[in-house]
Image (cartoon, rainbow, N blue to C red):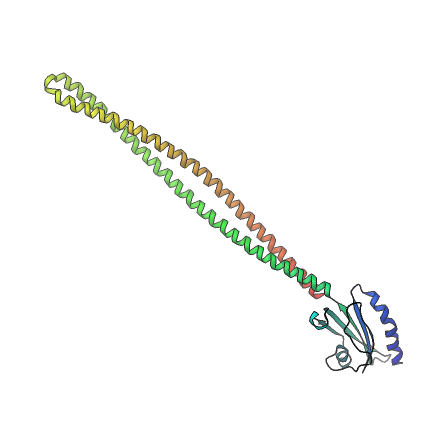
Length: 273
């Protein structure tokens, strides 16, 4: 009866291969010997029919321990990675009479896992690079803000200079007025006021020259102020652009982190197949 059970599995083993899309091999044993072996198209462990089962073999362990044995065999052993699944065969009384083993190629799964791991590694490198860009953008934003503050401080100093120039201008006008009055008084006293008239005239000339210089300084300060205002506008625009780039970069980093997580999940799923 035991032989009939084993013979039935041997007969059906050739059909078992057709149930799988992957390349597989099928083996059947009794409790002592490897009875029948059907190699795959490329997956072949070179098992010898009639050889005695020995400790360490999946079939030996399956029969001795009376349980399903699942092992993953790396590519280095037989040239193709595969998963072996071995189950006990029972008679009508529930006694173990042999085993059925299937080796299923997992080469595609391994390749898929390696590809996803490679993608994950690349994503980590890209994420690290983008993080560096984000850090750089953040530093640029901070630097731009500091420049903007310094520029605003310059504007304040220019405005204070305007006040000083206005004061000098008023002093010049008053000096000119005093010089004019002094000339009038010198002319009124005649010969006695001639020396004073010369001094008054020199004061007026100095006042007029000072007023001219003040006008030139004021024009220069207005030009500087205009340039500073334009610089402020450019810096503010640059700050806005940099802040926008920093936020966009952070969004990319978050998206890459999520993609990396999904890729790692795919890799784990491929390994579990």
